[in-house]
Every structure is written in structure tokens, then in C-alpha cells.
Length: 179
Image 1 (cartoon, rainbow, N blue to C red):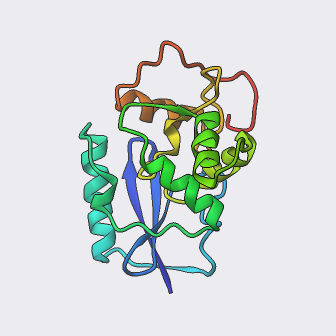
Image 2: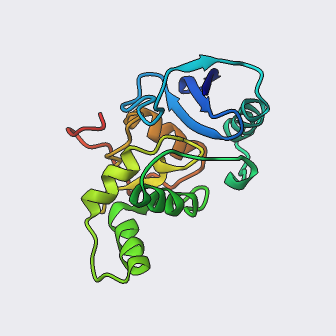
């Protein structure tokens, strides 16, 4: 059984999902792929300890604190490739960014391969089911484009600014799938 609750954030309402013990989802209202990893209907439950912990974490994050991801019990649902990409996302330091190509290079090294597709990595990043906490907003295009955030460019920009990222070399694309 899966449960959900909402959290009012500076980005709008967030939906949090749990299997009862772990956080399995966090989506911005209207986000692309909202809830798509949950295999069944979610039941509203506002009183799970995992939701209390996630809401406290989010309160602290939106107040500008640098909080460790490992403070929460996370269990994103996805295949091995996506899980590997999401683990790398968890390693991106607060206030820093990495490119899709940079993640592809790390993935290739771990797999003992010479190269891996940045597009394949982009697909996994875009399907991250625990937005904000698993920091997919910290991934940018190789040219500094803020492309690829399923929560939208405005949300990605707000999160990066909150974290104090130097935005001078980053820009919003004029067209693309993340607008």
C-alpha cells in the first residue's frame, strides 16, 4: 500500500509518497511524470513518521539550511540504471551543479565502459521520483543550459538560487522540453 500527503512549499504544493516506511516520491504540483513510479493508487495519510521527517527536512531546506540527504529514509522506485543515476545525484554537493555528460562519464567509469549516453542519463534524471531531496535540479547542460527539469525551469532556478549557486554562467533555454 502507498500513501500520500501534501506539503505547501515556496514552489507550490508538493506531493509526498510513501510505502509506509520510506519516502518513495516527491513531486511539484504539475510536474511531468507526477506519481508515475507508484504502481497503485495512493491513500491520503497525513500522520506517517516518514512524512513528518520529510516535511521537517523540507522546512529546513527552504529556510536555507544545508541538510544531508541521508537524514531521510528514501526508496525511489526504478530499474537498476535509474537507481545508479539517482545515487550519483545524491552525491552532488549542495550549491553545486554537474552536467548530464559528467554523470554519464561517472556511470561509464563505474560500468567499466569507455562512454555512456548523456541522453540516457537525462532520461533517468528526468524520471527522478523524489525531486528536490534527490537533487536532480543540480544537473545542467554542458553549455550551462538549465534544461531538463521536469518541475520546470522556474522551479529549477529558484532551487539553485536558494542554494547559492553562481548563476552567471547558467541560462534558461529559449525552447525545449523543460519549459
